[in-house]
View 1 (cartoon, rainbow, N blue to C red):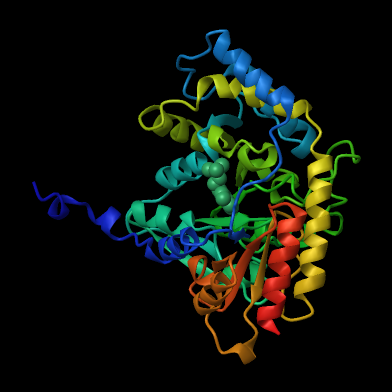
View 2 (view 1 turned 180 degrees about the horizontal axis):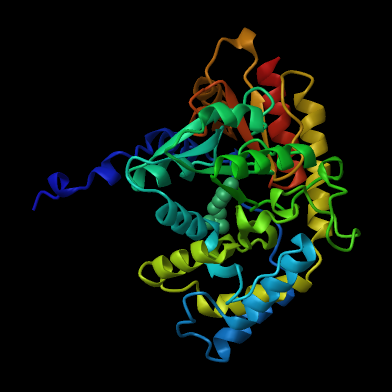
Length: 393
Ligand SMILES: Cc1ncc(COP(=O)(O)O)c(C=O)c1O
């Protein structure tokens, strides 16, 4: 049967050829210096691995409730109280639940909030899934141009809000830029959303990867735990914010597919209902694994990433423009104007020197920049930076 004519518009509307071409070029390299990877390179801490393995051995292999394992939800609720001052309960006005990765939470949020013809506002540059998730719902992701400093400020967002807007999506620290907002910028964005009656979704998947100058005095908790600013930390933010976080990046368990969402209970109830008929529940034994995450100290790996970040900024800022990443493990640098190349053409030249990076056009309407990931051992990073700096000189 020719199934091509049967394919739905929501699938046809998505084109992934740009990134595929780069990955294919990368595959042809014998010994690539891979600075394209979006996941951490440190080993999963032993208590987390052990908790996951023990849960499998103990027989926790069946479904959990759609909202997740009760023990994990208790840990999440405790942490949200400490970190944000939120009181999440099953019956109160604010609630948290477990999702199949951050992507699972995003998918359910888009499905719960977007009707065909409605709009959401996303930053440009954006995490690759955002526009496609809106397309899959028949909605429009309105891009908010954040060049050259990559800050999703209230000033930039305000003119884009219409009566069709359902939410504004903030991702800080961000993929692909690593930029974190200040406390004031977070407050202004939350105030804008509240005053215009639209939800603020805060994708905080990189919240644990935050470097000293981006950390905040805006703490609800033991100030010895460094935290990035979050719009969710302001008084009464919980009725206007949907918080989305993940375990994958922070603890090196991207393949476990686990995250959580928290926010207004009526919205969370709709998301859990949609989860029941799609994902059913998040991976059950691994929910026990990530329950151990809350007692693991990741300051060692984060410190190592800060050292790599410093090296990236020091080397690249001698040859091009880049905003210092306050968090995550990416740098988004400009292709120097005098090279006369698009991001994609630059990446092709980098690949000739065995360096794999991603063209900015994959994350943006513009193709003027390049994303580098420093989630790679220092030696590899140094080799890659040498080659990139040489290319830009
Ligand atoms: C900003 C952002 N949000 C969400 C995700 C999806 O993460 P997960 O693997 O938890 O689904 C990613 C992954 O790269 C990301 O960078």
